[in-house]
Amino acid sequence: TLTFGALVSATDPVSVIAVFTELRVDPKMFYLVFGESVLNDAVGIVLFKTFSKFVGYSVTPGSLALAALDFVVIFAGSAFVGAFVAAATAVVLRALRSDGWDGELRRRTVN
Image 1 (cartoon, rainbow, N blue to C red):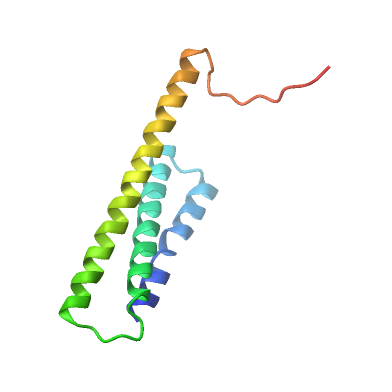
Image 2: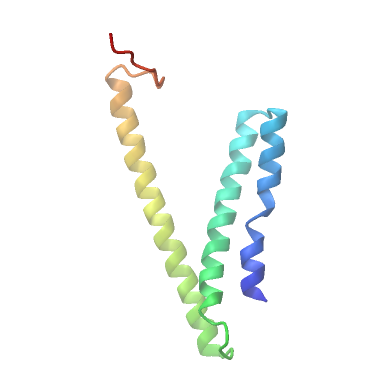
């Protein structure tokens, strides 16, 4: 039952983002809700992965401690990878901006 709850919990903000897109809500509010949605999805995935390891087994204090440790390790590892990729992207974009790139993607035509 906890595994199913972890699976369906990540679907909540999808409808809100769809409505925000349709109503053209302020971009700052859209990005805040989108960020919360991504974090919610990440927690749902980690919880599902953790709970699914214990399906069919009895719950003991040792297995609960193992589940908590598993959750923390996976979540911290994912956060570290995300922070590293974000920092690398920021460095690349800053380098591109210093070269005169204005962030626009233009279609190049071949004559």
